[in-house]
Structures are given as structure tokens and as C-alpha cells.
Length: 137
Image 1 (cartoon, rainbow, N blue to C red):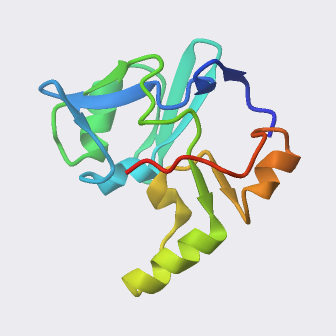
Image 2: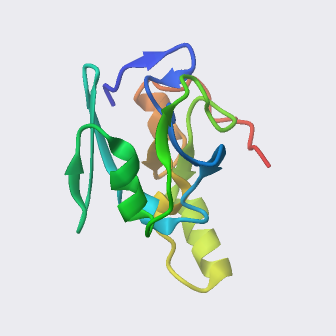
């Protein structure tokens, strides 16, 4: 709840991406990216994933191993949010989607900044001021 924010939402959120031949690689197509746990301390980015150890520099070869040998590089693109400053998943929406899909979906699949019971939780935390939000397509 105390993560630093700036004018674009959570500070450093979605600032980094993995590219191969100029194309952004996402966990939609490369699910192993969901295993990566980034940690940013000052200017030092460390990434780790189960079975791949950790890396604090020369990220391309490390991510290439995580992605099964695809040549790639880590690129920093400040303020390149998908479509909104915050990404929220409510447990009720997740439950409905899981029922529709016929399997239990993890909220991590949607890369949310917040997983909440209801939007009221974010109002009470002082993160948003109302429970009416635009939903991107």
C-alpha cells in the first residue's frame, strides 16, 4: 500500500520490457515470464526465477535462458503503461472468469497491481477516490 507513485501510476510499473528483434515479448506468448521476480533497489535491477537463479546485469542471456534460447534484451521504457496507471483485479470478477473458463485462474495471469475483494478496498486505502472506473477493452 506504500509503494511510491508518480503522475503515471505506480513508480517503475511496466517500465521494463523484453524485446527480440524489436518486438516486445509478453507472458501471453511466453508464460515463463510470469516466473520472473524483479527487485529494483536504487538503480540496480535484480531479476530471479525458480530454476534460473538471479541476474543483476547482462540481462539478455539470462532472459534468453528463461525463454528457451530466444535471443532477447531487457529494454527500459519509462511510462509505457498498457492503458491505465493501475491494473486492478477484483476477486468477484476473477471468480466469474474462472467459472466461464472452467478452471481456476490465478490473478497473476492479469498482471494486476492490486487484487482486492472490491474497489471499496482501494478507496479505503486512499489509492482511488471512487468505485467507478473505466474498463479497457
